[in-house]
Image 1: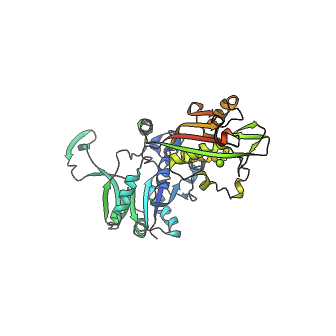
Image 2: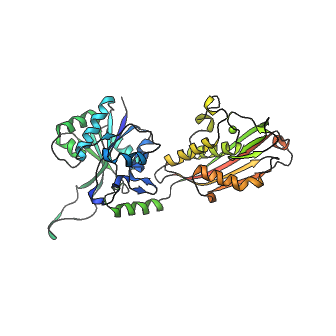
Image 3: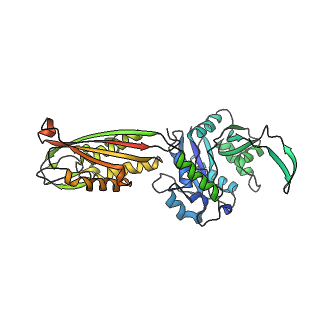
Length: 387
Ligand code: MG
């Protein structure tokens, strides 16, 4: 099997962090530190599965942190990081991958480039470690007194992910049981395996102290992700009925809108605009019209789903602008309620939502009052490392 698995180790108790919530579950820009890293592996096209190792005592923190993510049951870790990794590797033997990337749950900012470099290096080497050359001058000291300056020319700071061919690192970890080694590369080295260094990332920091967390918050706030714009368009024709659903609001009318779901053109156009900005296909792909589950469905579900995709990508909705095109019903009296409803469904403030309406001056199918059309434009800010 030519598949890579990410094994994310989050079983630490983190005594240095000094807070009730363990550091890997601390909130970083509204999401757990662990979740930031997990999302980056889950969405990486070359990672087939992501397996987390946790302290079973943290189960409630874990469940809250990963809500909505598609992950296998977590592995219960051991008393040390090394033992937790070994237990994670043992779990993977049931459906053994070709390669495994072992990553610290407290490193939220691993980039797709670093993941790529570690995977590529495994073509040539049994092991590969993301690392950065040491830039600061190093001193050896006795207490606070300098004894000597250490040459730093060949020194690197090891990060994670650390990638390995699976069978080799599993055997190395089994052989190292009972010894205390500082990282998985050290386990591999002890077993005589070749470990290559690839360029890590300056932003790929490990959250160890509360200061680290504060710095990470500031970095995230300042890091501008790419802006993406998507557009959506939809039409439904009038049919029998006594009301229409428009932007999630029920409006009494002399006709209804036909369609497989509730025919809410506003919400359909909005959903398609968001999917467009994410490059995630269209509404018909996610909710096939021939699927009986969506017969008469409340279209609010489609918009909630789109909002969930935004969150999963670590993106944010900057703005949504919807234009409804019809002669009747009059939209004006319902506009504010529509904005409130869309903001609620998308979990954003109402300043980020706009609803407008126009007629086509009696021309075309909307002018003949045969149906209603809607256009929407969604502006999204992707996560800083998502391109
Ligand atoms: Mg539609």
